[in-house]
Length: 151
Image (tube, rainbow, N blue to C red; front, side):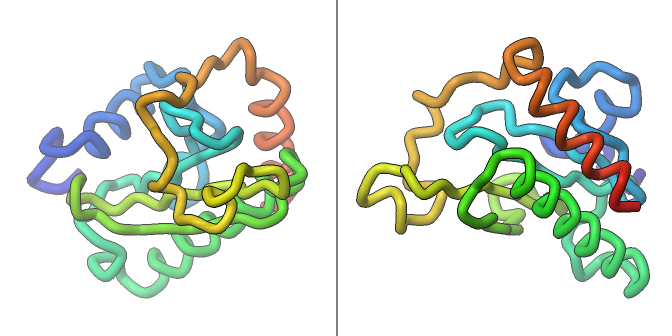
C-alpha cells in the first residue's frame, strides 16, 4: 500500500476487504476489488477499487492500468447481464476521495425523467437504500459467477 495508507475512504475500504470485513464484496479481481456501493441509488451500483491503492489511474504502470480498465469493463459486463440494465455508466473522479476508484453504474430503461438522462450524481444518494447483502444475495451470486466465468 502507498504511504498514504488509511488516508482516504478507499484506503480504509480496501483494508476492510483484505481483512474480510466488507459485506459489499462481489469478488477479488486481478486489479483489485469489485464491491457494491454502500448506497444503492440504482440497483447494482458498484465500484472497482485497486489493490494496492494508488492516487490516480495515471499512477499505475501501463500493464496495471490496462488490467484495471479491463476489470472495470468486465464488472460492467457482469452487471449488465445480471441486472438487465439498458447500459452501464463508468466514472473515475478522485476529487472527493483522492484515490483511484471506478464507479460502475447500471442505467435502466424505466428511470424517471429527467433522471433518466442525467448523470448518476443527480440522484439523492442520501435517500437511496443502504446495500443489504441478504436482500441482494442472488444479485451478488449472479455477478460473481459472471466474473468468474469471464476470466
